[in-house]
Image 1 (cartoon, rainbow, N blue to C red):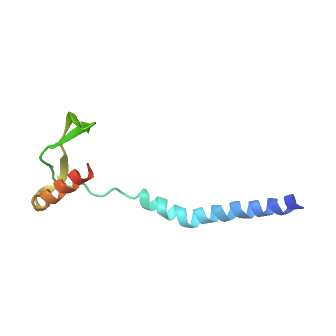
Image 2 (cartoon, rainbow, N blue to C red):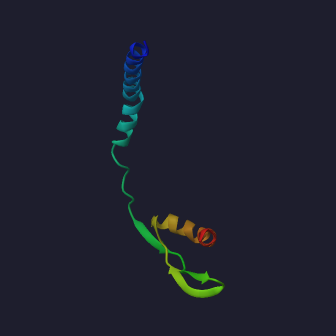
Length: 97
């Protein structure tokens, strides 16, 4: 008796999944395959001052790591905005390290 009920239920669920994919999945797939966004006209690279990170093991400085970060930014307005935000960005990176 269980098998008799399980087979139609399984067919119904597979059909519902197919219809759901057709109805909701295909529009999302079309959005993903749409033309890519336009290229940025001019990009620049701006760097942060190097981070020197001490590695301490058992209370003794064993070595240090120097981390240099270069950011790719979109044009002059973004570079000017980065100049105002640079101290906050540096502090946020150092806090996470």
